[in-house]
Image 1: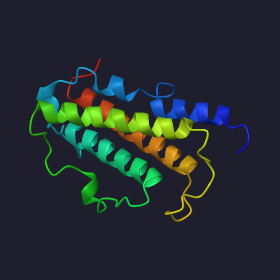
Image 2: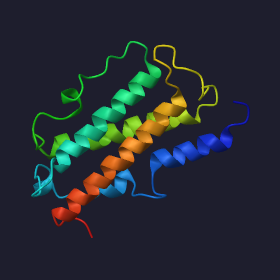
Image 3: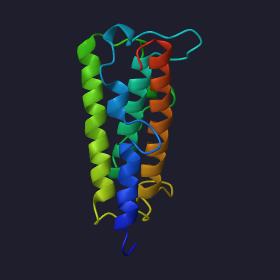
Image 4: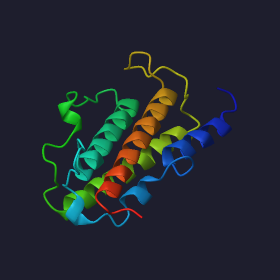
Length: 158
Protein backbone atom coordinates (compact mmCIF):
# COMPACT_ATOMS: atom_id res chain seq x y z
CA UNK A 1 0.00 0.00 0.00
CA UNK A 2 1.21 3.49 -0.66
CA UNK A 3 0.02 5.87 2.06
CA UNK A 4 -1.59 3.64 4.64
CA UNK A 5 -0.87 5.74 7.75
CA UNK A 6 -4.57 6.32 8.39
CA UNK A 7 -5.35 2.60 8.08
CA UNK A 8 -2.55 1.78 10.53
CA UNK A 9 -3.91 4.34 13.01
CA UNK A 10 -7.38 2.78 12.77
CA UNK A 11 -5.95 -0.70 13.28
CA UNK A 12 -4.04 0.41 16.36
CA UNK A 13 -7.16 2.03 17.79
CA UNK A 14 -9.10 -1.16 17.11
CA UNK A 15 -6.46 -3.29 18.85
CA UNK A 16 -6.28 -1.03 21.87
CA UNK A 17 -10.05 -0.79 22.25
CA UNK A 18 -11.91 1.96 23.99
CA UNK A 19 -14.01 3.12 21.06
CA UNK A 20 -17.01 0.81 20.81
CA UNK A 21 -15.98 -1.43 23.71
CA UNK A 22 -14.02 -1.48 26.94
CA UNK A 23 -10.26 -1.73 26.97
CA UNK A 24 -8.40 -4.73 28.33
CA UNK A 25 -7.07 -2.62 31.20
CA UNK A 26 -10.59 -1.57 32.18
CA UNK A 27 -11.76 -5.19 32.08
CA UNK A 28 -9.05 -6.45 34.44
CA UNK A 29 -8.61 -3.41 36.67
CA UNK A 30 -9.07 -4.26 40.35
CA UNK A 31 -10.49 -7.67 39.48
CA UNK A 32 -11.12 -9.37 42.83
CA UNK A 33 -8.88 -12.40 43.30
CA UNK A 34 -11.69 -14.28 45.03
CA UNK A 35 -13.54 -14.40 41.69
CA UNK A 36 -10.70 -15.53 39.39
CA UNK A 37 -11.78 -19.17 39.31
CA UNK A 38 -15.53 -18.84 39.76
CA UNK A 39 -17.99 -19.87 37.05
CA UNK A 40 -21.28 -18.06 37.58
CA UNK A 41 -24.40 -20.16 37.17
CA UNK A 42 -24.91 -20.82 33.47
CA UNK A 43 -21.45 -19.60 32.45
CA UNK A 44 -19.19 -21.92 30.51
CA UNK A 45 -15.97 -20.33 31.76
CA UNK A 46 -14.43 -18.60 34.75
CA UNK A 47 -12.66 -15.23 34.47
CA UNK A 48 -9.31 -17.06 34.66
CA UNK A 49 -10.25 -19.32 31.78
CA UNK A 50 -11.28 -16.34 29.64
CA UNK A 51 -8.15 -14.36 30.54
CA UNK A 52 -5.87 -17.27 29.69
CA UNK A 53 -7.77 -17.96 26.48
CA UNK A 54 -7.31 -14.31 25.48
CA UNK A 55 -3.61 -14.48 26.27
CA UNK A 56 -2.96 -17.78 24.50
CA UNK A 57 -4.94 -16.90 21.37
CA UNK A 58 -3.34 -13.46 21.10
CA UNK A 59 0.15 -14.94 21.56
CA UNK A 60 -0.59 -17.52 18.87
CA UNK A 61 -1.82 -14.92 16.36
CA UNK A 62 1.16 -12.66 17.09
CA UNK A 63 3.70 -15.45 16.76
CA UNK A 64 2.10 -16.78 13.58
CA UNK A 65 2.29 -13.25 12.16
CA UNK A 66 6.01 -12.84 12.80
CA UNK A 67 7.62 -16.25 13.15
CA UNK A 68 7.70 -18.84 10.36
CA UNK A 69 8.78 -21.54 12.84
CA UNK A 70 5.88 -20.98 15.24
CA UNK A 71 3.72 -24.00 16.00
CA UNK A 72 0.19 -23.24 17.17
CA UNK A 73 -1.31 -25.04 20.15
CA UNK A 74 -3.59 -27.98 19.45
CA UNK A 75 -7.11 -26.74 18.81
CA UNK A 76 -9.23 -26.33 20.87
CA UNK A 77 -7.70 -27.68 24.09
CA UNK A 78 -4.39 -25.86 23.69
CA UNK A 79 -6.16 -22.51 23.77
CA UNK A 80 -7.68 -22.93 27.22
CA UNK A 81 -6.14 -23.42 30.67
CA UNK A 82 -6.47 -26.83 32.28
CA UNK A 83 -8.09 -25.50 35.47
CA UNK A 84 -10.84 -22.95 36.13
CA UNK A 85 -8.65 -21.07 38.63
CA UNK A 86 -5.06 -19.85 38.55
CA UNK A 87 -2.56 -21.42 40.92
CA UNK A 88 -2.34 -18.08 42.73
CA UNK A 89 -2.70 -14.32 42.25
CA UNK A 90 0.78 -14.19 40.74
CA UNK A 91 -0.37 -16.39 37.85
CA UNK A 92 -3.22 -13.93 37.14
CA UNK A 93 -0.82 -10.98 37.24
CA UNK A 94 1.64 -12.77 34.96
CA UNK A 95 -1.10 -13.58 32.44
CA UNK A 96 -2.28 -9.94 32.43
CA UNK A 97 1.31 -8.77 31.88
CA UNK A 98 1.88 -11.25 29.05
CA UNK A 99 -1.34 -10.16 27.37
CA UNK A 100 -0.29 -6.52 27.56
CA UNK A 101 3.19 -7.25 26.19
CA UNK A 102 1.86 -9.26 23.25
CA UNK A 103 -0.76 -6.62 22.48
CA UNK A 104 1.98 -4.00 22.47
CA UNK A 105 4.00 -6.17 20.06
CA UNK A 106 1.02 -6.57 17.72
CA UNK A 107 0.42 -2.81 17.80
CA UNK A 108 4.10 -2.29 16.90
CA UNK A 109 3.72 -4.72 14.00
CA UNK A 110 0.65 -2.84 12.74
CA UNK A 111 2.49 0.49 13.06
CA UNK A 112 5.63 -0.72 11.30
CA UNK A 113 5.56 0.99 7.91
CA UNK A 114 8.08 -1.48 6.50
CA UNK A 115 5.49 -4.24 6.95
CA UNK A 116 3.14 -4.58 3.99
CA UNK A 117 -0.25 -5.10 5.59
CA UNK A 118 -1.64 -6.71 2.43
CA UNK A 119 1.24 -9.03 1.56
CA UNK A 120 0.60 -12.71 2.09
CA UNK A 121 2.42 -14.10 5.10
CA UNK A 122 5.00 -16.39 3.43
CA UNK A 123 4.46 -19.31 5.82
CA UNK A 124 0.68 -18.97 5.83
CA UNK A 125 -2.14 -20.05 3.58
CA UNK A 126 -3.13 -16.67 2.21
CA UNK A 127 -3.26 -14.73 5.49
CA UNK A 128 -2.00 -11.16 5.68
CA UNK A 129 -0.95 -9.00 8.62
CA UNK A 130 -4.11 -6.96 8.05
CA UNK A 131 -6.23 -10.08 8.41
CA UNK A 132 -4.38 -11.18 11.55
CA UNK A 133 -4.83 -7.76 13.17
CA UNK A 134 -8.55 -7.80 12.38
CA UNK A 135 -8.98 -11.38 13.63
CA UNK A 136 -7.14 -10.51 16.83
CA UNK A 137 -9.14 -7.35 17.46
CA UNK A 138 -12.40 -9.22 16.84
CA UNK A 139 -11.42 -12.14 19.08
CA UNK A 140 -10.25 -9.84 21.87
CA UNK A 141 -13.41 -7.71 21.71
CA UNK A 142 -15.62 -10.79 21.95
CA UNK A 143 -13.84 -12.27 24.95
CA UNK A 144 -13.38 -8.94 26.72
CA UNK A 145 -17.16 -8.61 26.53
CA UNK A 146 -17.42 -12.09 28.01
CA UNK A 147 -15.01 -11.14 30.80
CA UNK A 148 -17.07 -8.04 31.62
CA UNK A 149 -20.26 -10.10 31.68
CA UNK A 150 -18.62 -12.54 34.09
CA UNK A 151 -17.61 -9.61 36.31
CA UNK A 152 -21.22 -8.41 36.33
CA UNK A 153 -22.59 -11.84 37.13
CA UNK A 154 -20.07 -12.15 39.97
CA UNK A 155 -20.98 -8.70 41.33
CA UNK A 156 -17.51 -7.33 40.57
CA UNK A 157 -18.39 -4.62 38.01
CA UNK A 158 -20.01 -1.23 38.48
